[in-house]
Length: 119
Image (cartoon, rainbow, N blue to C red; front, side, top):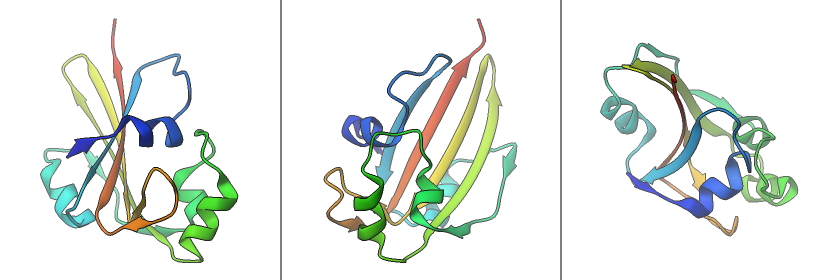
């Protein structure tokens, strides 16, 4: 996985009061990306969602542009979380995913990860 700050700026809150976000991508399918994440304490099934439902309202991305880009194509989404020592990690995997200019869909998988560390 390659983490991309430009995608993080688009799809995560500008300021996180708790924890931190990272957005990473891979050319792998969502099924392969899920398998890499083992062991996960909880893994939901992959579900098809409309783009705006999949990406939520937390980021600064242009919602109309994203909706046009997907053009009715549903995003395949999986969510999971895990507890690791003093960290809680929540992950959302999305496929296909947009490039940072919102002009092209990439066939791989985007991972939006939120990490909170207990103090």
